Image (cartoon, rainbow, N blue to C red; front, side):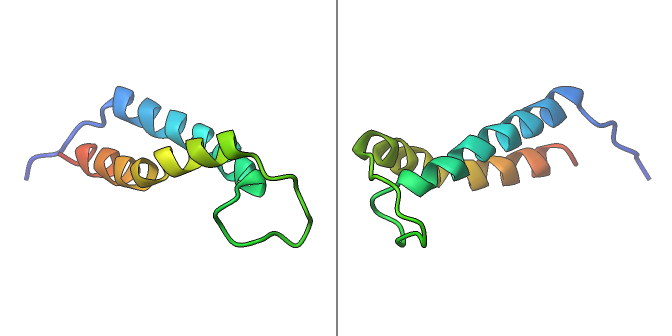
Length: 71
């Protein structure tokens, strides 16, 4: 059975995306399209646009990198 070697650059990409997700989820407090928060934050259209643009890419990219690391 062939053993695979972990690719360090893929692990580094995964950590970078995970670190980007922290401010992404924090910015969701100012989002105007999601569920309302229990604490009122002023809505920001620019932050909402950024979140709407990037939201379809984060999880598929993490799954892609997780799968690429086992090949």
